Amino acid sequence: MAAEVAAAVADEGSHLVFLDLTGAVKGYADGLPTGPLAADEAWRIGVDPAAVGAVVPGYALLAHARDAERVAADAAAYRAVLPQPCTLRAVLRPGAPDTVTAEHLRERTAAATGPGRADAVDFYHYGLVPYPVLDRIPVALKR
Image 1 (cartoon, rainbow, N blue to C red):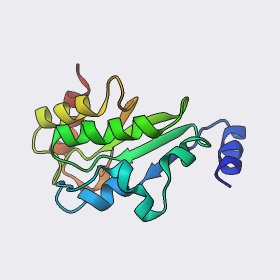
Image 2: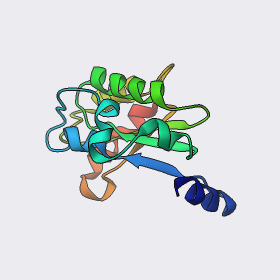
Image 3: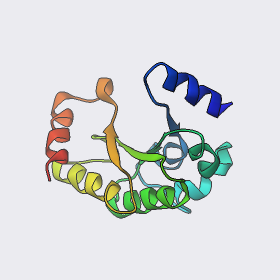
Image 4: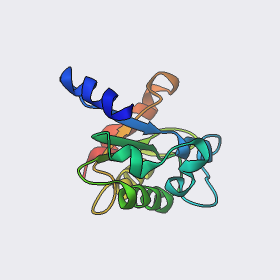
């Protein structure tokens, strides 16, 4: 079924990105996930990242963690199980409870990407945060 949906989306000129909610389940309330990495726990919500990644061109993880090292570890764990050429995106929250400053968001952005991790980052909560929190995003994207 996922392959059919991906093909239909591709026929319309777009590509499908599967959004794995496991990271949100683990760190949504406080940005402090504990225990195994999200990729290792995805089965608990009925997701097999390797199987899904085999039929969709893109996969996104919700990196709901304050700690940059946890973000890096989660991204690396997904990258390790996703088949090529499936792209990996890390979705970060620019504000509370995960991020406290623009520099902190930059650290988490850098941790999410790079060799063996996510190909790109996305940000969300646009309608639910004050404008100064959104101002962190351009800072986070500067290298």
